[in-house]
Image 1 (cartoon, helix red, strand yellow):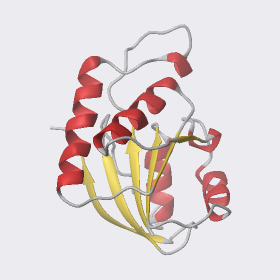
Image 2 (image 1 turned 90 degrees about the vertical axis):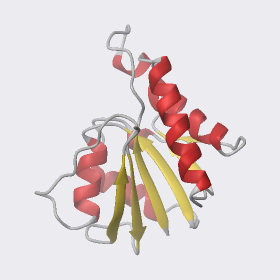
Image 3 (image 1 turned 45 degrees about the vertical axis):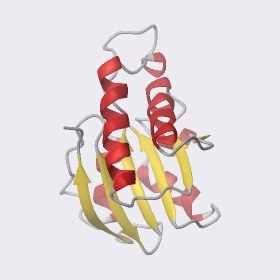
Length: 153
């Protein structure tokens, strides 16, 4: 399975709650441009799952639009303070698909990446809007290989 793990796009700094922070216009444009390039390069998406936080949902909507529209799902295991091992437990129970996109937040994206490749001390940095591609054998610690990490230009 190919998994694309994304950090949400640039968001406003202030909102009534962290969960309500929306994307900035720049954040929307950067996410759209990156995913349009990825689509042109042959990246396909079969399933799109995002944190229920507003900025992650908006990022997922941008990704869906880059592919001409598609359904997106919300998952509470993708919020910033979620535990990577609990997310992996949830993921292993999901139906399999070839190309899965996950939209989340720091620090979860970094922690999950490190756990997935079996190097918990070597956490990759994710700028806003970044996406990492993994070749996943199993949704467990050490069960994936990082293929690439890209950020908006």
